[in-house]
Image: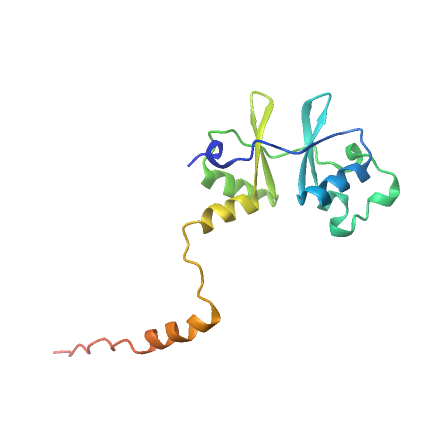
Length: 151
């Protein structure tokens, strides 16, 4: 599976020269953790909630602009990158999102959460607590394996 099949194409963006408070408002209103940073329409970096000081926004009261705290050395992928490769990039670089770029243009974004959701789609939902007891009971009643006699 390739990133073009799972990436989000409606990437939230913020201009690099905007006040950090504006980006913080986008994080909170849109319930997101990453913003693509642009300068005159060109993709120049990523701003994460963590860059702003985490959930409390410790960097906000310092009058910073987005450009002051954004990450400019961004790990990116292409639409043809495999999901496996994307997972390895996220894990290997300890980042939470992977901008998908083609010919210098931002095409989409894939987050760690997106990959977990993809992985979870095929998984069996864990049983509710009332069902767990019967599941354990069924497993406990399995017949033991026959003993093999040695000659």
